[in-house]
Image 1 (cartoon, rainbow, N blue to C red):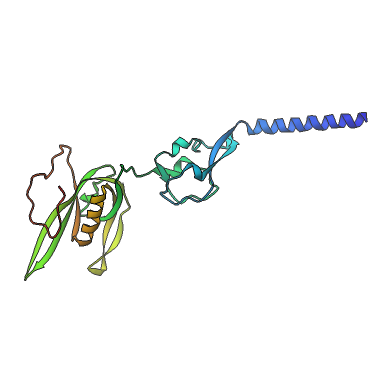
Image 2: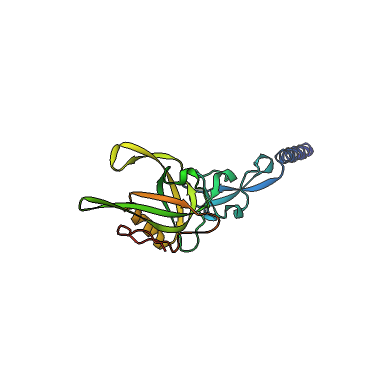
Amino acid sequence: MILAALGSVAVFVSVVGYVGSVRAEVGVKTDVLQLKRAIPAYTRVTEADLQRIRVPRKWSPTTMVTDLGQLEGKVASADLAPGSYLQIGMLVPGPSLEPGQREIAIMIDAETGVAGKVHKGMIVDIYATYSKTQGQATLSCAARIVKAARVIQIGQLTNIQKEKNNSATESAVPITFALSAPDSLKLTREESFANKIRLALIGGSGQSLDGVKLPPVCETVPAN
């Protein structure tokens, strides 16, 4: 009996020692956020998509997201798999829209997109050019269709097929704007009918074409 008791004490001491050594090796633990489901690219990550997991701090990179406040205004930078530990590099700033605004993207070719000078956050006017046949003459006209549009994203340069020539391509960039509901509807309509859509950077002086009389516009209403 005495030997059994001594053996039990020895086992207990060895277990406690082993647990202590493991704890010393692992160190302090910290909370990280793990995805419970797949998140498509450019989708907001919410608290409902996450669960907290405790991991050893020494094995947790400093890039781990540990605070839900870090999700504010961010979206997934790529498709995220369930079970992934959320890290800062997996998130990018999402589009910042004011109440009532719409996010809308159109393709702008290199020539009419101010030769690559347009960047996120800039304010631009959007112009459209039109042509129509009247008798034997071709009439051309232009209009500013959207005034002071804010650019919120610039895509990658890509080659697209020209509508009037199936064998030819042109370089274009998707540019995303934050627009009011009427302006987004107008831009969508005019893009379908215009020959060209052009962007015009607005100078720092704030001067615009207000009060300048433009030529008649082909069946559209210029922006005020």
